Every structure is written in structure tokens, then in C-alpha cells.
Image 1: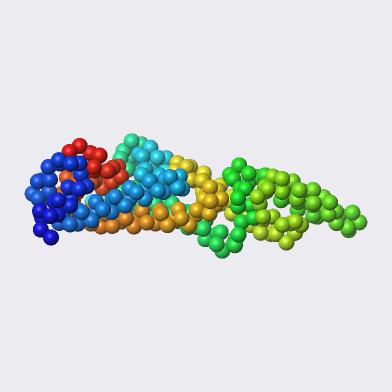
Image 2: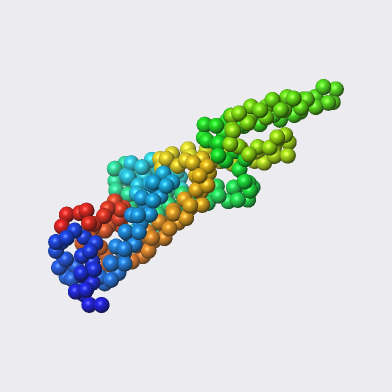
Length: 279
């Protein structure tokens, strides 16, 4: 494909009337830039889908990224000094809250978010074949479920002359059913009590994730209720793959990428549609 045809294809990514002659003045492969722009189109669409479907916006604003620095794995990064010695640097101490978010910053966030979601999915997969409280559970209802289960256990252990008091456990089971009408908790609860308590442990893990990732508005309980955890994982992974591909190509097209408005030191340039820029 000759350069004139490549320029015609390239022009479709920009506003009508944009002067494309500057792209021919730099000796870099136009076809690689075209591939990169196509990947960035996919990245932008995937960002919107992930935001609208899972309420996770990975086009991080500077203030959002700065808030995420409370997570140690994101805050502390390795850096090489002039003597090629590796040092651990705190981003909180080296950047301002309104500094642009770099591609490297975003990559770390997506890596850690994927690990967090994957860890939760693995717990659910290994320890909880199904969720008894799934459709009814929410962050502000975990304590209620835990309290009712504790009361049921206490009632189950009560005795009169070594005889159980089944009406006491039934009373708590009635409360449980009223509080969580969509829950699939059997009656009597005895055979499912162990699973219910394991489920509470899982929900407490989800509460910790919500708090850890509050800057991203992560809501694990929405993902659980909508059975969307695996979908969120897939989308984060796909965004990470697209980002890696863009970064991998960048050194060979750094000059024409700058002409196209693509910069690795500011992810806003990756998520901005070049067609909306000035001609």
C-alpha cells in the first residue's frame, strides 16, 4: 500500500479538512499508526462499555489516580537512578494531585484491579458454588445477615434438659426470610449454615475491596448480584491488552503519534476522539 492510500485511510480518523502533509515528513510507518488508532477506537468503546455496564471508569482523572495512591501496590514503584541502582519511589511524594495520569500509571491500576477482581472470583469459585444471599445482599446488609446467623446459631445451641428448642430457630429463620426474601436459604437452616457463614466471610472480603477501591466507586455487591464479576474481569483484561499493544508500537511511531495527539505521559490523549479535535 503506497503512502497516498495510507494518508487517505489515516485522514478518516481526524476531522474533515485536516492537513495531513506533516505525517509524510516523518520517516515512520503510517500503517502502524493506523493500527494504533484502530486499537484506540476499540479502547474508547470498551472504556464506555465498562463504565456504563460495571460502573468502572478506567479513563482515570488525575484526582482519581491520586486517591488510588492510598493503595501501596500503586503508590510505590521501582525507579532506576543514574548509577542504574533500583530505588522504590512513592508517587505521593513525587507527583502533584493534578499531574496527568501516564500510561504506566494506568497500567499499574488495571493490573492491581484485575488481581483484586480475580482474587474475589477465585474465592467464589473455590469456596462458594452458589450464593444463598446473592440477589438480596448489599454492602449495608452484610451486618444484618451476620447478626441473624449468629442469633440462629445461639438459638440452635440452647437446650432445656438437653432437648433442642426448634421454635426458637424457626423464629430466626422467619426473620431471615423476611429480611432477605429472594435469598435461597433453606428451612431448616441446619444443612446450609456452614455455607452461609462462609458466604459472610466472602462478603466481608468484598467490603474490604469496596473500601480499598472506593476512588473507582467499585461495588462488588452489584457485580455479584448481576453475576457480572466475570464480565468485569474480561473487560479489564481486554483494556489492558489493548493498552499494552499501543505501548508496544509507540517507539516506532513516536513522532507521528505526537502529530496524531497521542502521548504516553497523558492517558487523556488516548481516550480523546481525534475526530473531535480541531482540524
